[in-house]
Length: 283
Length: 323
Image (tube, rainbow over all chains, first blue to last red; front, side):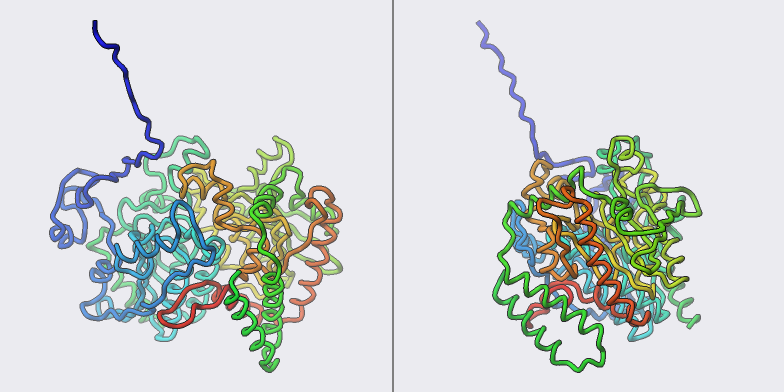
């Protein structure tokens, strides 16, 4: 007599979401599946040579792509987050910070400094999504503010490259206050008649989109970047609306008038060079 | 609260008091905020129950909403509608009114009482058109020198397809940027839930008054639980971690004054709640009305530029908000 078959299926409550290619090797193209050595991708500005998919770029690599060789002088390197709320979710915030610093080699989710792009002096503020999802807490807010001040002092334009999931929940209300803080810094930059260009890279959402990122004199993005105040999953869950295929993407933002241009990564540096020249000639 | 923090605050207060009063108002404003922070620190830390009770009361279905206060505090209220570009957004109300012998401009988030009105008001969640209507009113106020009073009470900016297509993020950013440029007095009253970008869009101001049982937070407890705990049933844990209650907001230097509520919460006696809020608002507007516009704007920017807690290498931890 055959043993009765027992069917056991386990439902994973916390199963990782694989829909955005999580779990795949980071150098495997989520769009066409091609796989690359790291040096191949780096040489191609982290754009898939097969299909043109734009991979995320880490802050230091982005600076190397944009700044003229040897011109970048980092500022405010020493800033580190505190844990003002003694925040503890599944793990303490201090542990998440320490881990992020070890894994990224960065003090927080933004790197700032003076630089030249195509021989045009500017200030650069570049975000890194790998550091806690590029979230904006006190340090990111302070660094953006110092970058604006540095631009004002040297009378040069500010170029910000954003990549962020939004305000950092672990610093609570202080993170929300970084929205008005960065807005005030940009208003001072405007009063000093310094140009401001934002490059919204994938993804630029929530608190960063709703503050300094949207205040550029010129706002550009990269193909396929998600630029949304609220991401597609939450919109879907809250409204149960059918989302358009290009919901929140740079292409949709361009069509609705929220962007000046979408530039393939190889055209970004020449574009910034042109913009910076125009701001300088206008002074 | 650590003794260290108290020491820092006392030191700063002493320093501020010692400075010559040439730059007058800014210092007295700061000193007042620090004094309130100090008083708070000397009180016991709010318990978990007290924090969660505020989260509950802030969102109580009978809690007075913006228009309940308008009715009780203002005269000659004229509501103004529409963003002059696309739409009228009933989730955010704007108007002109008379308050204790001065004309003010009002911008407030408005929830609904019954199911029909709730739907019409979209549960107090504004679209970009709402924020643009607010900006239109800010320009009117600036032109005529009317102080602006904003009432914050919203679960957040509306997360919908049309809202995104019409530029929710940009509208919130530009509304704040406009507030950073105005040279008229700006006061916010947090009367219920002040959540996320939806609240700060009309919250970049000279003075923030917060009712005793209101909450002010970077994200709703449910949203935070869904992201960090991956389970929105953990909303109590999330709320306790976020510390969105008035006492903590004052300690962190994010608000200027806690406005008392009638015993048991504003909903038990809306008339008394309005009287208490009106007195605080009147006092605050009186203080601000003597400050020249350019100075107001400079102090306002300075206020936000100094908020944040971080360390700079080997030096002392940077001071709390407002430092």
